[in-house]
Amino acid sequence: EEEICEELKPLQTTNKPFDDAEAMRLLSEELEWRGPIAPGVCAPECAEPDGAPLFASISASPIASASLGQVYKATLHDGSEVAVKVQRPSAMRQVATDFAVLTTVLYGIQSTGWGNGDLVEITDIVAAGVFEEMDYRNEAVNAQRFERSLDFLGYVSVPAAVPSLPPTPRVLVTEWVAGRHLSDLSREEGTRMTNMAVDAVTASLVLTGFVHADPHEGNIMLGDDGRLYFLDFGLMSEVRAEIMEAFAYGIQCVLNKDWRGLVTAFVQTGFVGTPIEYREDTTGEFGSGSPEAMAAELEERMESVPGGTSRFGALSTVLFDMGNQWRMYTPPYIILLIRTFLTLEGIAGQVDPNFNIYEVSLPWAVRRALSPSTSAGEEALRGALLASDNTLRWDRVNELIEQQQLAAPAGEQQAVEAEGAAEGASAAAAAEGPVGGAATPPATADPLDAVRVLLGSPGGATLRRIARDLDSTELLTTLTTSRKTRHLRRLGVRMLAESLTQRFAAALSPPPKHERRPPPEQLPVSPASEALRRRRAERLAGVRRVLVASHLQRQVRAGWRGAAAIGAVGLLFFRVAVVAFCKAAVRTLPGAVGGIRRAVLRG
Image (cartoon, rainbow, N blue to C red; front, side, top):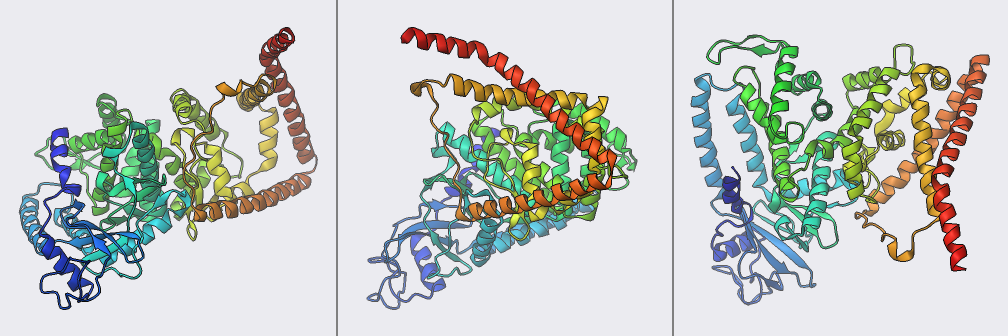
């Protein structure tokens, strides 16, 4: 399989180019230029060979050549460098012929009863996307829309179209991007670029709904300015809100090994029908199947296949095998989503064989779950956090804490490797972009960070309503006095003690200057991302004031119960702080004494 991929890889950027004279003719024709293309470079049958040249210079041959077009490097008369993309003259005819043949073959296959999906419909959808890709005016519009949709990340860019040379159906002139592809990067640079790319594509997959469906090596670059550049925006995919929510839910289910929940995600995406259908004999008719039986088989297969809970390719293999007995459908958008994830995973595997695409995607899946845009998603989120009487579901809180503690060992190691990266990926809004923020390796993502960011974002309206409706009197009383929250109080003591220990140790015995770590390299942050972050912080401060005032009023209305709850919380915080302070002091005292002794001896 890897050998096949390596053989096909040149099709991305190193196809055999078509004739340069024909490319110059197309340039002249599409841009309606009668003079030379550049000094000494004329198109065949140039109308005004002594006229002013279009460019100050242009490369003698293409610097990249793909299946549908090739790219030249040129210089404008103001000295700025540009990329000139020219479509192959025979591209439209060849693609139309290929799809006509493919449709005929698939129609014949489908008429035999093979396959669960509408193969011809899938081909039509893909063909429509490819034909759209062949109009470079659409590509220019898609590029601008994609960049705007991910403004909140702060590091995603696209080559901007040159205003003085508007795109035409077969020619696109954009700014020249100084950067390198994956094959030219060091391992550290490759890992950095891959993390950013997976973060960006996953955010678009479960948050923005506008996805780059062709993120192969040739279409991703690490710019010399440290930013992530996407290229070639012909093949894009739009994902509906309910599909994004189901996809995000599926990511969480795989990581939590919740196979029953994964079956539910399959049904929600349309990958599995309702009712679920199953057959014992692969040549027999489909009958009734149960989600429990399907989940049991998923668990058995996913636990036995290598990389079952870390590789999307493993899940694809399992589902392909199960498709012989379970009826599965392949909606066109599912094909594009699978293709996108598999392509990303292939890139990531080159820089880190142990790369877990689900873990990298989890922060964005959590943010989508906390910012639903459908009524079903809002009801599910509310039901997951609050009981019918608006009291907090402590069982769900305990489950989340247990999951966090189980994942901690692996997460801690990854966090050490990624220490000091930029602030966790967070969220903005539909009007301003979806929820998000400056990117960071997902291993360092904090679920509480997602809540904080969402509370200050337009996309967090559902979460704010839940925070407003929460029975805070019951919350405070249970948190301070109930046996079922004792482990939460102990967890608070431990976390505060660890934080104080680090602060005491740094204050009492700072490391020598030569041992101090240099500040970590920050990811690029765009002005648009900074503006979003400032607005989000202002909104969050306002939301906090409103929520605090609202719940204080609620305690007043609750009478003695409210007063007792507030008093108990104050006493709890005092006890936690005292215990944490004592633990931190005991931990740092030996080091402090040793430091004083060394100082005295030196004196």
